[in-house]
Structure formats: C-alpha cells, structure tokens
Amino acid sequence: MFITFEGPEGSGKTTQIRLLAEWLQNQGRSVVTTREPGGTRIGNGVRALLLDISHTEMTPRTETLLFNAARAQIVHEVIRPALEAGQVVLCDRFFDSTLAYQGYGYGQDRAELGRIIRYATGGLTPDLTIYLDVQPEVGLARKQAGSTQEWNRLDARAVAFHKAVQKGYEELIRAEPARWSVVDGDLPAQAVHGAVVALVASRLSVGVDLWIAEVLR
Ligand code: TYD
Image (tube, rainbow, N blue to C red; front, side, top):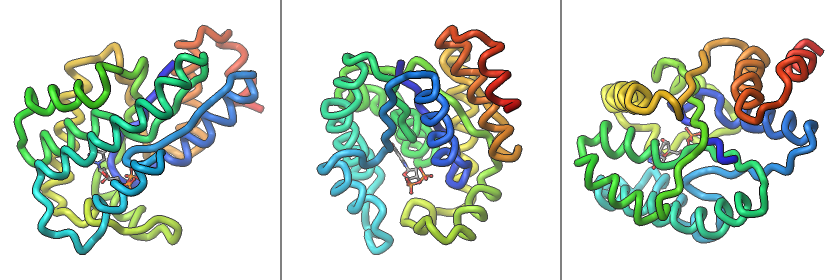
C-alpha cells in the first residue's frame, strides 16, 4: 500500500508519518518511510540544489524537472521495490506537490506537468493521499519558529504563492475524492494521529475496534 502526505509547510507531515509508521509496525506491518525531494543519494543531491536559498535564478521549469528527476530515482530505487515486496510505503510529498506548487503556484500548464510526472513515475499513483489541512500562514509561522527545520528557498516565496498552492490542493482534492482524505492539521498531534490511523485502518481492513483501542490507550 502506497500512502502519501501532502499539505503546506509546517503542517506536521513529518510527525504524523513517524507516528503512523510506529502504529503500522505495532500492527506487524513492514513499513518504509521516505520523503520528496530526497530519499536517495541522487535525490538528496537534487534536494540541495532545489532548496539552496542562494539559487534565486532558478526558473519554474528547471524546478519542475529537478523535482521530477528526484522522483524518478526514488520511485525506481525505493518505492516500487518496497511495494513489490509487500511493504507499506509512507511518502512525505509526491507528485501532487508538483501539481500544487509548480502548477497552481507558478501557473505552469497542468497537462504538461501531468506528462512529465507520468514519465518520472511510470504512472505510479498513491492508494491514499492524506492532506493535513492548516492555513499556509500558520504552517509557515510554525516552521519559522521551529529550531530543527531549516528555512529554505521554497518557503521564502510570498504568502500569495502559498495561498495559490492551497487553492490548488483544494481543486486536486475535489477532482479525486476517492484518493484524498483531509485531516484538520490544527488539532493536537495525537488527535491528528487518531484521525490518520482511522483512515489507514479502514483501507487496510484492520478491525475498527483495534485502532480505537490503540488510540484510547
Ligand atoms: P521541505 O523542507 O521538505 O518542506 P516540507 O517539510 O514542507 O515538505 O521542502 C520541500 C519544499 O518543496 C516544499 O516547499 C514543497 C516543495 N515542493 C515542490 O514545490 N514541488 C514538488 O514536487 C515537491 C515534492 C516539493
């Protein structure tokens, strides 16, 4: 099963992926967690290029191709092999981020982006995509205040850009309601975790009583 997490910066994806991975492991599942851009040696090199705050001259087209170069590598090296081995894969961002940021954020043609994404992924699509819903301003403020996370070139874009990204996500969710689930990211982390577990448990057809017991524990 392939589960991706999307949402604005500072929406708590990293924490939720860690908690969900622990929960799945306690259920006896084998789990692989990874993130975009990055997750491979080559992808981490591409990530450094993308996030470098001094790379102000990077065009949206270059950005799109770099994200998708990293994506092609992670799909080939990590995600497909894990899925073929029957593992659950949790990925922090996937192609929906390209559609939201490079598409809706920069106004690049989404049909063209779709073709690039298809080339990079070979058509791999998540079984479930969880959107952690927080207002972009709140997420950015959380991230800026955090001591462990670095403020990067992509965070530094204007609030109007992040608003366009948010609207983009809303459209993506409306277009594919069966794949997406929205969770209120303003709730305390444990409550968000409970909601995430409920979604995943229902997809994995784990008994609902099992996760309720777990969440209430
Ligand atoms: P990161 O520090 O990993 O942020 P986050 O914790 O919010 O995921 O930076 C990733 C940034 O890259 C984030 O601003 C979203 C952006 N991004 C794109 O613009 N397009 C993409 O295809 C992907 C995967 C990420």
